[in-house]
Each structure stands twice: as C-alpha cells, then as structure tokens.
Length: 341
Image (cartoon, rainbow, N blue to C red):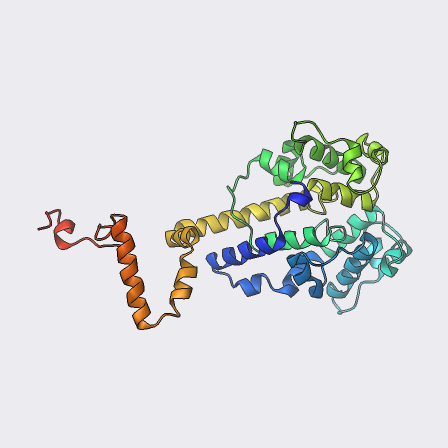
C-alpha cells in the first residue's frame, strides 16, 4: 500500500485504544506519549501533532541526527553514561570519527553505518530512517496489533518481510542466511517491485519510484542491477513509495521476521481472547460499551423509558419474549419441554 493511501494515524489510534480495552489493557498506558516516543524515536512533544496530521515532517538529515541523539540519551551504558562514539562504531568495525557528522548533525551516515548503529542499540532496523508518520504508525501497531486473519504461512511471512520463503524457513529453524548488506538491499528492492505492482500488474518503473522523492530513475539503476547501494535519502524514498516500514531494506532476516511474527502473535492473542469470551465480540460488533456508557448518565425514570423502548423494538422485530434472546427467557414449561399455556 502506498504511503499516501495509508489510514490516518488518528483513526489507527482510536482503533488501537478500542482494541486495548477489548484485550484488557489500559489504553492510556498502551498509548502513552512517552511509550510511543520510545518505540518510534519521535520526540514526545511532536507525537500529538503527528497523530493529528498537523505536524510538518522534519528533513531527513535533521531527523536522523535527532533519532541518534535520542538513542544515546535513552539507551545508556551500565554506568548511566552515554555510549562513546568509538564504542558504537567499533561494534560494526568502523572508526569512531566516522560517526562524528551524524552526532553533530552535519551529515548522513552510510547505509552500513546506519544499520550498525541500530543493531548496537537494539532498535528496529528503520529507527533512524522512518518518517514520523511511519514511525508512529509502527509504534501503534506494536502497542496492540489490529486483528487480521492471523496467517503465518511462509508466503505471508515472505510478503511481510521481503525474505524468500526458503530463507524464512531457515531463519525460523535458527539458521538465518547471512547476506552481504548490498545483496540484501537489492533483493528486498526487487521483492517490493515484484510483490507491489501497479494496478495493471506491471512493476513500477524506476522513473516513477525515483520521481516520488525528486530523483531520476537513473539514480536507481545500479541498485536494480545489484551493483550498488542507495543512499539513505533514496532508501527512505523507496520505502515510503511502497508504504513499508522504514527498516524494510535494512533489517537483517532475524529482525524482519521477528517483527512480522510479533504482529501476528498480537493478532492471534486478541482473537483468542475474543473466542474465550464471546461477549467481547458482541461488544465489538454492536458498540454496546458506548451505549452503556451513555445510559449510565440516565435517571431512574430514564432507565425505565429505555427499557420500555427496548421492549418496543424487540416486539417490532418479533423477538419480545422469545427464549434465547435479549427479549425473553425460557419459562418452566419450555425448559421442561412442555407447551406454554
């Protein structure tokens, strides 16, 4: 789904809040601004505006710098101090000086460096890269997943992650393939073009993809041929064009599959709760909670009027006094299998 066609975040937030209640969670806790900020990397003060659609997007270079600074400020070492640049860079075999421009906000890191920073801090693969809407959308999804059909077959997991079904099976078995980052990014890009075609079934052209972020189709030629890596701006544009999360191209197989399985697990957990308590499905289907909440403000006379009105409605639908419905209960004769006089 293209990013422009995504549901607005305010609607997603309302659905997540309702789903949290049905799953026995406190919506205020699930959707706390601090929690969404921690999951998404979007500053707390910007969360309400992003959800409402009124907050302007931050330029990529400034956004990546802010996310990196947030990581260092909120994920500290065991002594409570910020990790030094040298320690972060050493983890992926680079000199600490290579992170200087990122830390100062004067330049973007290379794709390999961005992947290494995110892996060092244990955040999802698009943490530095995702635009605010994508980041908050992902945080909402991880807070309480929307209920879907719960499929977990290899093809579905392949579609969600960009990993081939065979590689999905290997990863599930604890033997994830180790691809060079350049080859992985190339495979994920080709997966997007193959599985998210135009309405006529043809793959989107490189020109149309690149044009969505004001670049030329030629700039993606080497990526399409598996001969080069996109820069961070191009990677962000590709992911936004196809409406996938900001780490789709960067996540290693284990990270990508873990995210997909976490979403499916959340879906199944909520479905299971509804099966265990059928009343939850009734509440969901008929918005009974909203009715009861409003009815709670009625006076005793109002309650009587409401009951009389319900009887009138049930009578019109032929349900008044019918055993097994809200309009009536089995009498002794019916319960015993006898006739009602």
